[in-house]
Length: 382
Ligand code: SF4
Image (cartoon, rainbow, N blue to C red; front, side, top):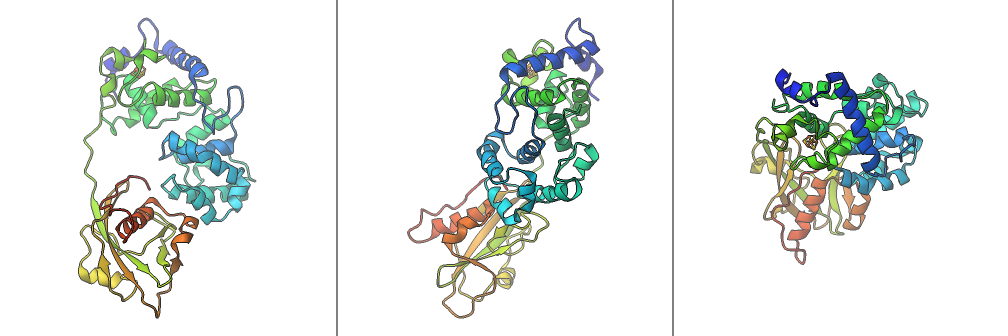
């Protein structure tokens, strides 16, 4: 737990702890009524939120920024306006609509959860915490967010933004991730009985627009008077973080095989695991060292004259960085291996993850008449 002296310093001078717990949420709600963000999934003031929209937006926002989700949400909701439409859709359709949002496991879980809502809950998103937690892809944070925003229940909605605001408000100097339980407990003391959904969204807005990661805008903050981090002059340095561990690196070789008609050999990854069910260019397994010649040959999908392209495709996953070498070959005719053959004109129909799109760009960049070879393409999305 954070130092008691620091916590005491967090309370506004002359205001008791219980009054602070009442006064600060009220102040934040008053600020929210004037400054709330207008987001496509958010109910307007005075209107009830639609649970399906809340659930969908919370899944989309799990690992994706608000501007990116805002750019995709309306299109997704137009295609799948109700949970029964989502449940009845094919997984390919859902994955296709999810393109650009990354972390495709969320789309697969969303689809499975929609089917569970239809079969187990009569097509109605449950309001109960345990029933929500049993849905695929719904963790503690999402349970709390849905309970508060969609059903008006008193729930403690704590993500990285809220942790940052709490660390500053209470001047918690314990580094993350060790401070997480303390920050969650502190956040819980603030949740009001009335308007808990608005309070959760107000806190999100405060973290996104005022108490921002690099430069907290304390002058515009409804909690400035009470904020211990601001008073101590350390708000911008909070939350403190334990030094990040370096991510491991993995290596592999992908095989770009073209048929005489220009079609390219693709394959679908296993349903479970990283990029589960997504379409990719065949490759060796990804290991801690670059694959040797024997391993490369044994995983090549066909006997052909394989040529390496200059440069590599680099991609950052959450837990490791990946570096892929690309080999290309063209089948002169004869027997083509069985697989998912697709012409470039058909590529748009597939829900390619970012990694596959990078491989395609790399090959196109290296092809005669293509753009100048892009040796390394870097990005950090799924
Ligand atoms: Fe954040 Fe500043 Fe508000 Fe404190 S006063 S909560 S540091 S914006």
